[in-house]
Image (cartoon, rainbow, N blue to C red; front, side):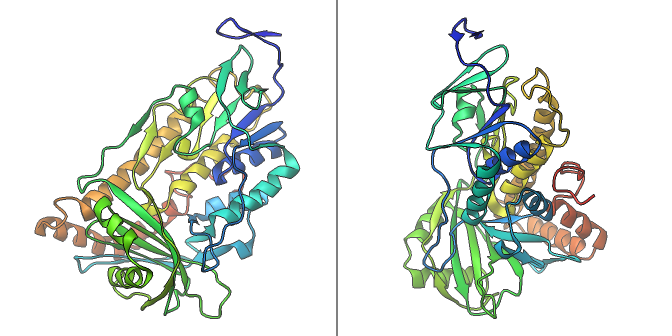
Length: 413
């Protein structure tokens, strides 16, 4: 028997050290990482992941993973070499300028993986080391002195970790407010995600062009062909332009995509169906609203997809979560306050970076001659400064000072 904060007597003793709600990449990684540390973990997911393939044979949703994120997933057994396409170089340019950036490193800058490939593989790993409660939803949380009761699955845990996405039920049940960042000055944006096949090989390169209403990115996919030509497409635009692009037939969309990317991969010869989703940023008021509740990943913050950092920052949450393993009560008072502060600070920095880029390239003053001059001067300076480029690469790879310490699960040092 135990007395809850509301005075209600609960009859179930705490069984799990933590219950992780949400089986996306971040939630699965958190659950497996904690289980590997020796904790008893329950994973709760309403819709178990399944392998998805579009008409071109790929999941329409792919993620760009930093080397630090890949190291973490490899350490958990959640990724194999064949799952990933390396990004050996990246070319960034804009619609109205003479400057461009080209990033290269000694190894791959990042890796592209299909979302459902990663989640289904992690799901199988999770099944071997923790208890999965599939097709279950959490309808309520009741705090006690030593645990929290999760209504729906009817289990008790010392800590609940909400990794259930931007519309997080756990965040709402914990009464944590979510602040949506006002639309950037160019207006609200939506993004289109799809897969296309080009007439030229991507050569393990990624390409991003900032257009008048938003950026478009082409990320390499590994399709097994002698000349790799399949790319994942993320195209962010104004809501009005998004509607127009979404309504085009395939031939017209292929032509529009080729024009927007200035033929960098030649003509596009095939395109899959298109997904559309809001491209906006939001931040939870508190990642640790009470001692026994945490929110991580998209439940804690959402980032604009222009830099592809959403999953990577979520996996940083996981690395920070297991950075100092101890078998004390995971929901002990004060245990996660430092984590909450540090992760919110990191989120604010990332959101500010995305906001600044959008304002510079797509804001109402982006076409101003002085703004254009400043942009291109800055781009040429960065491209000519190896030290600055190297630091930007380190941050994108998840090993810069803005990220969590490297000496965590999945680190090579």
